Image (cartoon, rainbow, N blue to C red; front, side, top):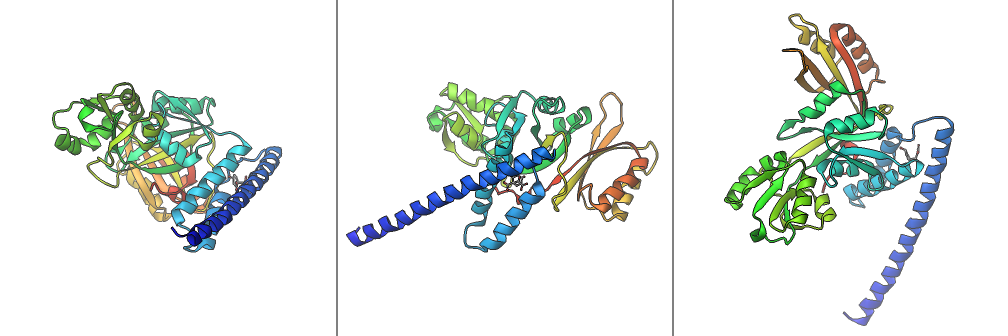
Length: 366
Ligand SMILES: O=C(O)C(=O)C[C@]1(C(=O)O)C=C[C@@H](O)C=C1
């Protein structure tokens, strides 16, 4: 490189350094303002988290940006900034299905950012119990996977515990084969949770035909085993690779692309309307012909967009079912409120599980 170019780079880097310092100064001022708002909200007993305001911030910035700065990076940067500011108002604690570095943990980090405190639990049931008892204000639980379908233990826990849905987050699940050395020849057993093992079945059969698989409690537990034993390979998340200092053998070994899991954030109280929300209900139908049809007719008459309908058997009551319904809109929206009021007398059981912002404002998983 000629001297002239070296000088030019040096000069530009000085400009970048000055800008980085300016950005840092602005971030410090921003968090100061957020703390002030936090204090005012405390005085008025108002919720710290305001999803409507957050959505407005993203929308304004994306509009102002045009296409100058990569859009997804802009979302990611501001997501971290806003979550850090929100957390500075009060530290947020989140219960999830552990151990560390499971996909639930990853989904939590995507939603609440890196600075929240994450409390690992042994089972999905325990996540619900933590939140219901008020020991941890939020929980994150998987609810459905685009390939494997519903996560029934989550749906069943909604029947058992009194919690509300506060948010949702979608995570594109890509599976990595990892081990201590990064060498495929070292692997004598592949450990993972049953779901990832099933999702990578074809790949494993083709590339590791004589290697046995070992189903364990979670992808985090599999990663932990691989960290302790050089002959164990694990199928695990990117977070697990970092956490347990493992090496990637092969990335993206899932048999089908577009493997996405939807997670729900549970808490004590749903947030107010953000403008693009989803409402979830749990209902029981009357014991008469056409009972489910009566419910669907109300939704259709009110022009409510139903995005999910799922039935689960009621434990201890043979051949009796409850239905989970997801619809577009917030309980504060007139038509959703009216629809629910009309549904109530038609149902043997009716529970509003919550209204919460749809996940489309969050950064994608690239
Ligand atoms: O505007 C507010 O109400 C704030 O508390 C500030 C702020 C932010 O950092 O921009 C933080 C948390 C809220 O969820 C919304 C926005």
